[in-house]
Image (cartoon, rainbow, N blue to C red; front, side, top):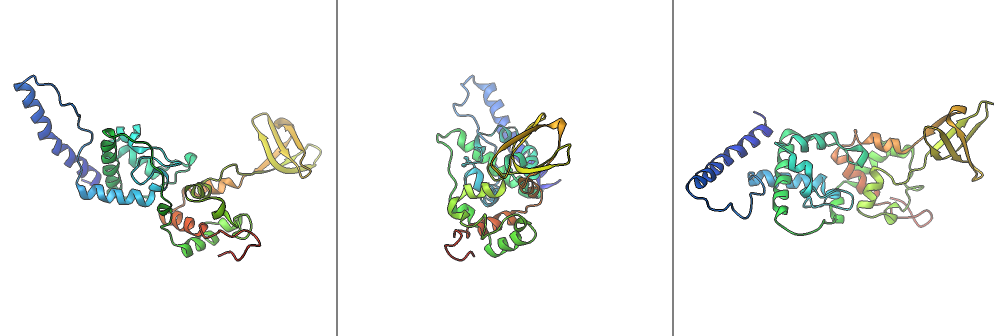
Amino acid sequence: MNFLGSTLHWSVLLAVPLLAGFAHSAAQTAAPAPASPILSQPYPPELVQSGGALFRQDCSFCHGRDAGGGESGPDLTRSKLVTADVGGDRIGAVVRDGRPEKGMPRFAYSDQQIASLMAFLHTQQGDALGKKGGRKGVDVSDLQTGNVEAGRQYFEGAGGCASCHSPSGDLAGIASRYQGLELEKQMLYPKHPTSKVTVSLVSGQTITGTLAYLDEFTVGLVDSTAMYRSWRIGDVQYKVDAPVNAHVELFAKYTDADIHNLMAYLQTLRSSPGSGSIP
């Protein structure tokens, strides 16, 4: 039996005498049902603690330290997916597959890690059902756990970041323009990315500019003279260069350490061009 199965089996066995006790009481008296329902099944404290540590390490920068929600991540204590999860089946699938369209990378967690994360989230959800309170923020300290030098090496090497970005160019001073979670979001999936497009006319002429509009009927761009130009899709050929696609492709390649280390490095880029040396 794997770890997920044994954890679920343990929880079911623990619940059996409790349910039997309820049945016995109901048979002897017509007393009203308890006012407060059982909010969550109990898990071994060490399993919950392990899941909490894992959550704070990898998930708190979006979902808050207590899973109550952050600036970009939803409140998981009110998540229908967490409520419907049985033995980590829903939670495990999302964690391992990620949600690239929402900026969530995938995590290669073991069965034991999924089980501990499940125990933590179920416990947090159960506790939250009986409490009042809003979404929680994300501490800057949650995003300062990586290694700067390892992040620099990833930026210049395996991550391929240096092929499009420069710490003394477009990224100079980025940590002064964005802090904390906003910087993390820019790193994972930049807002309002600019794409280039090259349009080839029937005459053989090519026009290159910034992509301004594209649907199934029309392609439009702003050329080097700041003029907007557009064509019917059927009358031209075009090629879009979208740098943001490189960010999306990294979702399947990032390790937990890569994200933390790259974030640590970006947080050192506080100087603007001409204002001093860049680390």
